[in-house]
Image (cartoon, rainbow, N blue to C red):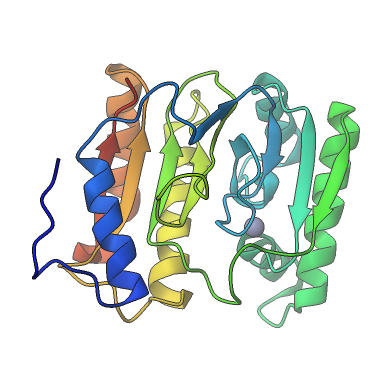
Length: 246
Ligand SMILES: [Zn+2]
């Protein structure tokens, strides 16, 4: 067990979150831990304000460079049984800017995100739900992004149940390491450039990209390589970490 010393005693919410994350990274997660929920396969955004989902991708896949049909196929393979959208989605704003230009409004982004998720639910023939109240303030409060590396598992980190810092969550969709890496880089950019802690991240208090669970092997190496490439231009305020599940 890590020993708490006087100097490492947290003084702000940000340093407290950083401190807890470093502690959490030192021990493997138990496979039966209360923090892990398996079973359902609800698709939600990676946003830390929409934690109630087992398959997680930015904007329910709205920024997929290969388009709608590709995103639907991925979600079918992942066994998605419900699709959600949410207000104030960063990925939907990106998509809106591509469609309407830099002046795209919040209303246009919300509408685009809802339509995307509704169309996906219809294509998959599963229920659709819109999430209005986010479990965060106006700005992103995530200090990390968790990447669910447990292949084929509908898995949720119930962060409220145990003492885990707020983080984006991305599901690694096994056939596309570059997509996983792009999601993580997008999350890091939101936190470092627009988040509540954007001025507090530093070389000593980095934004962490945390690979959770998963097996050693070629795919994991490919994801890490893709992450290194995607995170390169974000500089030394980002690090790649691993959390084992045993
Ligand atoms: Zn979102």
